[in-house]
Image (tube, rainbow, N blue to C red; front, side, top):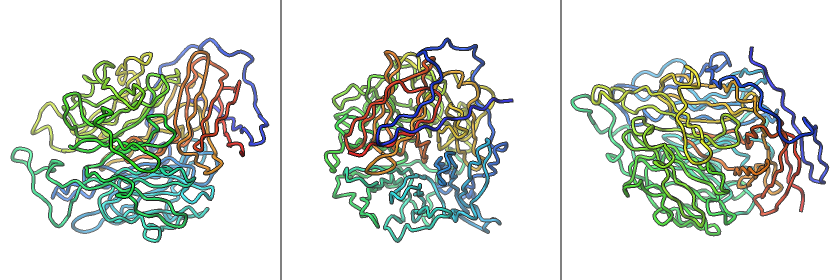
Length: 554
């Protein structure tokens, strides 16, 4: 039987009273004997009966192969992360009965989820892709934005149920939306919305493409790129300020991530594009300038555009700035861009050992996270091809592919240790979205991977929490979500930096709490730079707890 660790939920109150329960008077403990870390697939066991429906019709409509998104968020504020899964729908012929819909699963706190879709009013039946959770109206609960093929939808959390208000607040764009996320781009204290759009595609004008002599899905360059969207939050509605804010380029956007990559105090935007150059939008006091070429993040090492899918920021080398990782198509290596400071990146894919293992798979969702709690960021990639009969055209390729975990080796190299994590981890799938969260509150981060036309894979992390950890939940003064905050956790001579940001991966929304592995350290110091620039320090914090930090009033 798996031992569950009950979390401590402690708070740093605004008036400065610190409540802490010390676990040990020392700062380091010898590591206990370690069992092998395994990831156990517990989807059915956890009560998740969702199956993605892609509407396959034999006509090879382009939308069928991209999968659906997933969001971990605490919709009812009970301290346990709930799960929202995005579905497709029928395209041609007779609709299935029942009609495929998105689903909300409430986390009931014992490792299980309960399907509450019907009572929550979240049974969206559009053809959906990405999802992002945030408290857009600052009323203390999490709302949901869903990017669709067709009008996007926005669900306001009303406490016991949700109301769809996309058209009312002006975010129901009818194009093909993919990944999305929230940010306070203009530093006015409310949350704005960025939506990556993919291509111009019409069901009524479906191009016929083939792999050899066999009907198949088209290449992305068959379809015209389109522009992304930036919406400014005006309180009761959103305004489309895309062009006015400098978001002017057209691409085939699939992944979006946010970071203050240049440490100038505002949030920048990166978009991974499929088959054309990627975009790095540098935020210059509310106006964006695309700087990917000069920053070194636009192309691969040969100066060519790759087929970008997923993307994430993370400080893998622990130097205090956020590095960048992008997943790409098969026979293109994934790209790791090391942040050198001063707004410049260097391609580090080959130097870190990531080039060879990524050449054959087709990567989608990805995430930097410390799966083994040893105080550095590891890297996960969800894999799966887009052509179901690819083996007939290329015997070296498979439709179903194994996901990959790359362990961080002292911030200089990554080692592919996928085979060490158990048969559930290595089981082949058609992987798409990746969402990371400690859904069972036991201290180690778990994985959820969505798949095309199949059930998602909830991979529970078993064995990592023999090491110490800290989960930091931030509550901001200007906005409760505290997006844009920067947290540094210090143990001895180790400094780990995380940013509280939306987005990242592919079509996904992650645990809003910042997760830190502490290895053998039992106490830590914490430095916080809040979104408004306020700095706060917390000293001698006990490990192995969920720490809720409320920003002090000015």
